[in-house]
Length: 60
Ligand SMILES: [Zn+2]
Image 1 (tube, helix red, strand yellow):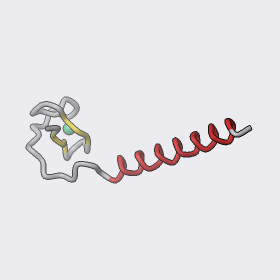
Image 2: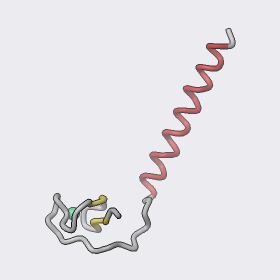
Image 3: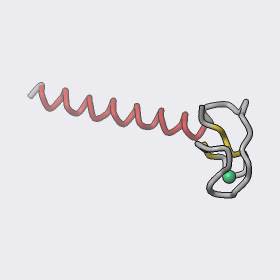
């Protein structure tokens, strides 16, 4: 279970954040912040676009 550093707004594997040195508590933080959701959406759109290009290339 990955913990979450509220200070750095990043996931932490251990019990202490390696960036700011703060002890990180077991979190009830939302597991996927909007930035990651945005990144996933952009990735999906990019892959869909690449797939579309591949299909149109294969159709020739
Ligand atoms: Zn931190």
